[in-house]
Length: 268
Image 1: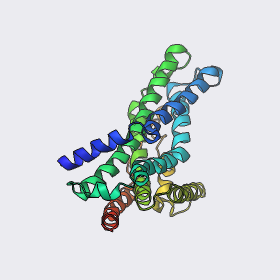
Image 2 (image 1 turned 135 degrees about the vertical axis):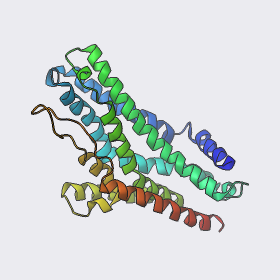
Image 3 (image 1 turned 90 degrees about the vertical axis):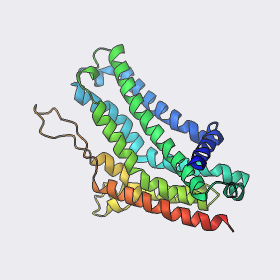
């Protein structure tokens, strides 16, 4: 356990000044700011909408842009950035020769990449809520205060996080095996495009492709469930759908397989 904690701290100190670390903070901030100023500059298009409809438009504009394309590409970049330091410095053999178990080193790297994905999604959640309430303070015509979206939005981002585990495990392994960025990026990009195509064409087996899971997670949210008022939806999240189960299974399986591949590679 001590070796794992030391390895995890080491990952933080090595990456805290890199673009990979700051992307987890800057990407949510940038996307939310763009949507914020879009709503603020054109209040007539959305002002006076019911609170739940307004939140759906505002939070949906952020999560759809992020979840459809940016989240898979961000995961590809993060998985590579965590491992690129060792590749560039050619320190893999040195790292695995330390008096720390290879499992601790490997797990610390993987969980640090997972932490960066979690951090980005958490900030998306917090920035969305904060900016929406700020809009309501600046312009009272925005009726964000009429509806509490906190739980729904939190469950939505939790589902996106779970849906990203399969992609992260695959890209993490690819970035360990290959030192250049083009190969894992190319595979990840093709997988993402394939996922968009499969989901958009409603293929029966789209849930088997991990790169389709974030888009499927957004599409499987339940937005209309026994609404008490006609035209006013009740927001709920069906958290554990089939793509989430596949994402968890693929993520765990590739993580374990990856360790044995890396262990064999490291002693060459």
